[in-house]
Image 1 (cartoon, rainbow over the protein chains, first blue to last red):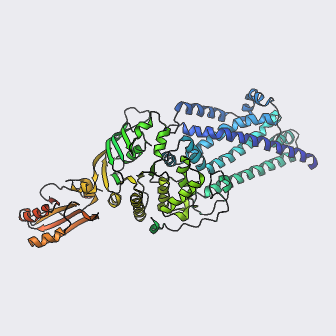
Image 2: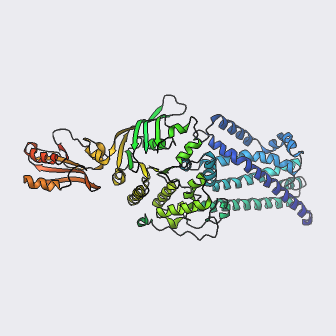
Image 3: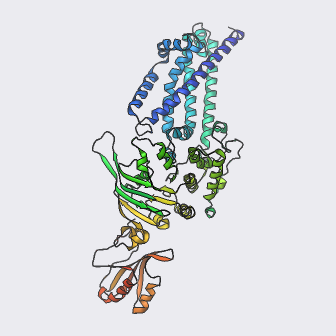
Length: 260
Length: 347
């Protein structure tokens, strides 16, 4: 197989993978984030303590998490058809990918949100905040670095899952590696695919780590100005969120004499 | 300003029946408007439960809490979640925490704006108010810094600025200085004192440090095992015979009386004449007086505190000088044959 033959194949496969992983990541976040937060809130001692609901959600998440993806894909075929109208192709693969990733992401979110100091929740309550305020102003922003790491992990896992999407004719890099590389003994093509996957995964991991660290830094001791302030741009009416800010120098000692 | 009556809190351990912890046992607290009221006690005495019950972060099992004439326990309703009215009431009660509880993802200014966001204040107004408050606590140059870049004392100043954002009449301080070094503690207490005077803020603070009470409190209460054992203004406490709190606030040391000397504790509780009694005593009766120890403060031009002095000779020989001191309106406790009235180092 010559390069000119491989190139269009690889190009198409890369786009297919990106498309499937991209959409399923979006859906996983949209579905998994509330679910993960709900797992924390409904837990014992949580703001919306509800042991029954907590156990039910927890159990569903556990079952879905333990399901091998290939089985999930086959088992969900009826559901997939009812949503996308087909059981083959890229769109059809997104449904099981997303459904598989939601509980995965939810568990990661749960762990991340649990790390948030309970004192902060108490502080917001003492200001008259309700549960929604606590979620919006405390739980999500405070766990954002962890949430970004969780998203990275989820994307990488989804790329792994998507290799199996070829079984429903969805294409993608994993599918190329199996069909051409393994079944047609095109070893060369397989290695190129592996290399592309390795590069893509490394890149995603790097970007994710960088973003998480950038956000985390403002909570650290380094004193350097955070780089990725655009992620914070949604904070309301905040002149500090401009990203052109000069590095905050090490704070001088408290000026006691300045007190009223 | 803050009144609790019969406040009781029982913690029930999950699943294990019969294991209950009585954290508050019928606490009656009365904090007057504009005063700094300190509740002191050891760990586990119920101080934290008490202050959390005042803004109903903890639901009391029984009893009522009234803040600024509003019965908060009535607003709370039955459910575990705080209703709209209780949340509104809470927004007018500031609270400062031992571990500051600032959001690490927000700048100092955004942290101070948080209560205003919850109240629904407009962006421009929020920003104005936050900067004004930061100026008040002496941190206007730190508005754009993140909490992690501040020292402990600065963090607590931000915490105080944030607590003031809702224009509270009442400030609750939950061990606000316990995580700070002595120097910073003093500056934070000074700030609280200034705010109390300038804004007419009523402050209820809990602490395990006697120094905190001594430094800024107008009134104090001692808590033990979920109950308030003693309470009152500082001079009331001093005027109470055998007050543990007074003894701990103004600790004095020295040996008890013996055959050749009489040791007495003189308590100045603010109502006594302002003349220098000790030198008068010495001159009037021509006797020598040694001061063994003293812990005195001047509050509003009056001397309060305790002093332990030694007169030579047995008690019987010193009846007249002691009588003189009593006439001055001072409280006199003779240390000696009877058991010690004061507990040393109750801290």
